[in-house]
Length: 138
Image (cartoon, rainbow, N blue to C red; front, side):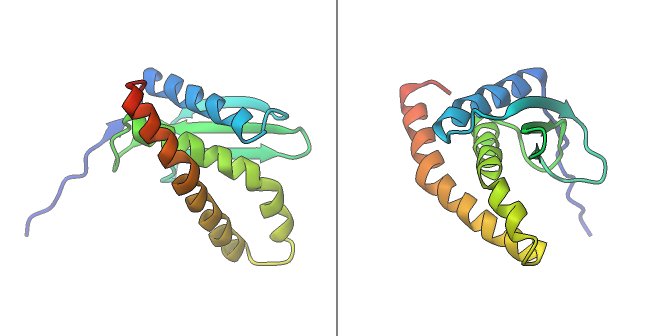
């Protein structure tokens, strides 16, 4: 039986800086400038997330993270940009998600939130990326 080796991609400082640049591109477009921002580039233990955002409503801060280990996906500019957009959408929907989980299951609310994020990716991110790639600004 043949085993397929999984590539072991690692993100670089250049990838991290590009991720930050893309997050900063979307924050004002989604009216999210009222949060303090923290950016982390680190390896996650026991987590397969490529990127993440953690929100503190109390401190009004958002911590955006880029995982160093992208073992199953090559971290090209398209993927980094799409992940940055995705995390900004997560930040935009966080208050709603937080409130709804008091009444509904986390799993149900999480699924609904991701339906909205996927719609936003199709409606906003993909046209942005196609326009950007035509201009050669990748």
